[in-house]
Length: 318
Image (cartoon, rainbow, N blue to C red; front, side):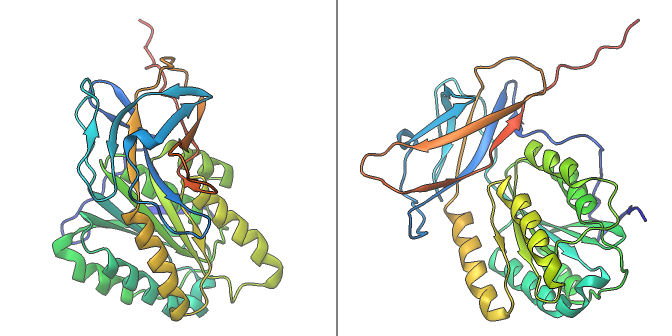
């Protein structure tokens, strides 16, 4: 059984799905390749006092010149010839699995989603994607936050089929039109038996997006033989975007998870460059970001792994 997509009109908020592949750049005359970056030491403590000169960016091994840099909780700086800076406001998404396989974990998942959203009430807007066989999507403004929470609390696990890959793809499509930082949190057991998209298709869509994905996986009630595969897929989804995957079993464990995710969001630098490779060939370009400040050892830089180059517009033959 394949998934169908239902567009949910939530309190006047209409989400339009364009069907276009999301682009990882902010457009203002030239293509800026933008990245969210966090830096942690070997103990997991985030480094939030770095400056633009502490970073070097390489694309396919070639050093790139930063055109804008946004420190943690600070105003952006940019080179003199940089175009208009992209917005730094936060767009938050929650992908909520309401398929039958989540029945035993639904109460924990509902509480988890509400608790996390309450920690980030300064987001500009909130996108809720609910899925089983169908995918339903709605966007809420800050003033509609209470209605969003009410909707999540009312959810029950129903249909036995799960379209996780399709639901994530639907969110990515809608997020491609948003400017600023985009964080998506998945609440799921990681199963999928109804998507039109394959897992490899989804990974390519994630690579093409500038969304950071964190996965909250509920695996305690899944078959022991399935847990490793479910865990690995959720970790892959998160890591390709520069995010993390967590597997809590209680509300107490969730407190630590949310503290880590909230701290990472607060500790995220934003930076961007105009690629020296001007080819419009649609190829994958690997990006590496290094911290060069003397004296820093055993640090970990987390960000997405690269991006797809733009494609040359197709011209119809006369």
